[in-house]
Image (cartoon, rainbow, N blue to C red; front, side):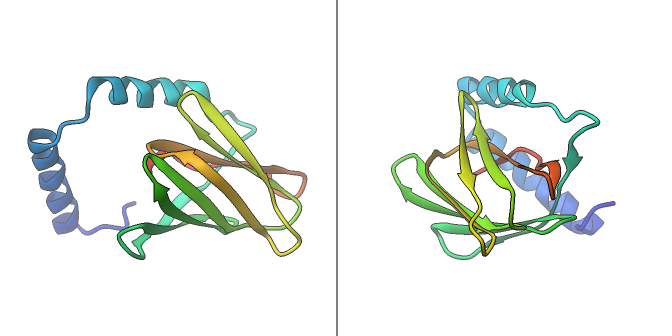
Length: 143
């Protein structure tokens, strides 16, 4: 089931074709993204968090929502090829941000906030771990 109508999916496919022609993904980036997908594959012990919303808040900030379970993420370009990843999730868990070649962990405060600075822009995946959440994983996306 898709959140997009057939017309929207067709438009997105045409836009993707246009980008493939006018601004193709460099082979090294494509290989890194493919390698990253191999680094962390969901297993039966992982619960998948689906993308529920993806909103551009400004030219520098993007907001994403994942569920079930409620993971609210804000990604803000902080300069060069770095982004800050902040958000809200249930208390008592840790949030990992993974990217090709690395990962960073943020503890979640008593209000459910997490914050990771200096994350390389590019493909990332978020993992939520802890007793309350078990283990949950977002799909890979580009920030």
